[in-house]
Image 1 (cartoon, rainbow, N blue to C red):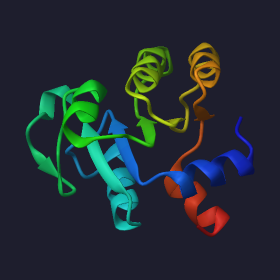
Image 2: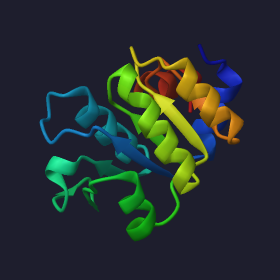
Image 3: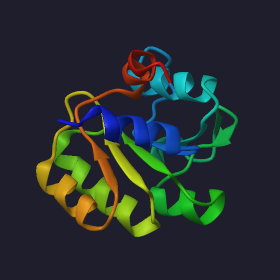
Length: 139
């Protein structure tokens, strides 16, 4: 659903990544991927309203993307760990905060959300995982 050039551009252009749907449980994919990204040098800001205020991966967990933008500054990439039908609202928030890219995780596909994000000038990656794509592309 996303070509290698777009994936490479998003991953090499991002410095700050908001992980929406981050879980404090170490066995959850959202936790493992966020930790992987942090270990690769990205600034990772976990987003989970139920965990807001905690410290994780060296950052304060935020309740929403709007709170991230307000308190942590610009976001380059929004990594979406939500169901496909919920990805639209996250993509719209990503547009609203001026993110550069929306990344929908494996199994997350929302063509309407992708179209809105692209129309607003964001890069979009769907149904992929950065923890798989980074090693695959040698980044």
